[in-house]
Length: 144
Image: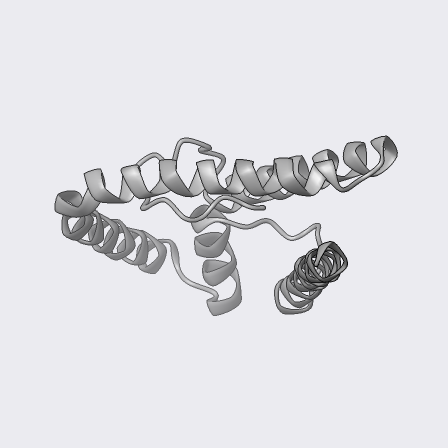
């Protein structure tokens, strides 16, 4: 019975690591190089450059995007308490899983896993505009 549990645990760990590697690779393939900036302001700037917008067009586009953002935030406002509490619960599950995985690893692997997790959290915060609290954005799941 213990052997079966061990195999199941190894399979789950392997699936977790493989999924993370595939997700990371897919993200890099879709987003391109690491040097490219992300976020709403970078997107607006890239749009302005690629479409060769005039200053007047850029101001109008910025205004429309800000209006869209306010409207979407108004839609999320009544859901915000539930989203916040769900994000807290997701963090608890994530932290618990991380601790369980660490118990399977040797000290060197544990340090590497912690670094991977910190890097994933930093990248997520950067994609969200540098705001780790979620700000006025709906929260998403924390990285492993």
